[in-house]
Image (cartoon, rainbow, N blue to C red; front, side, top):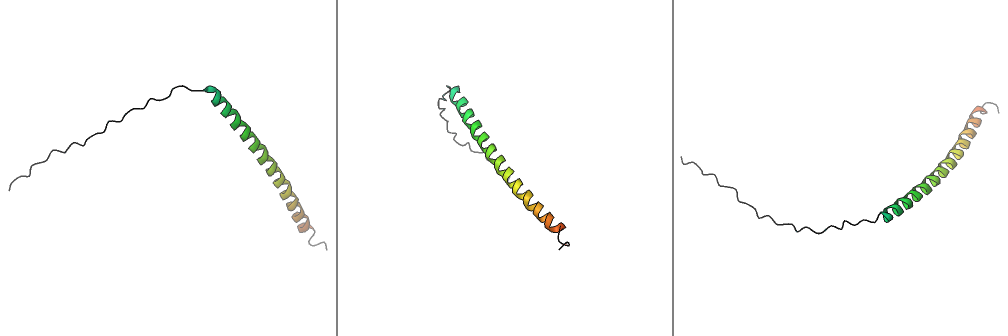
Length: 77
């Protein structure tokens, strides 16, 4: 039997990637302005959510209180 000869793997062509010049200038004023705007938005959302949660708690506690009163007074009629 004749031995099979191993073939050398073929090399694939590699494309050279052109490097683009990266803009390294950075405006820190814009960063500060964006952070301030985000903080104001977050604060407004937290206040709105807290108010909504407070209203829901008040509404639910009244409903629970009414149910408890009805339950306790069920046999007194």
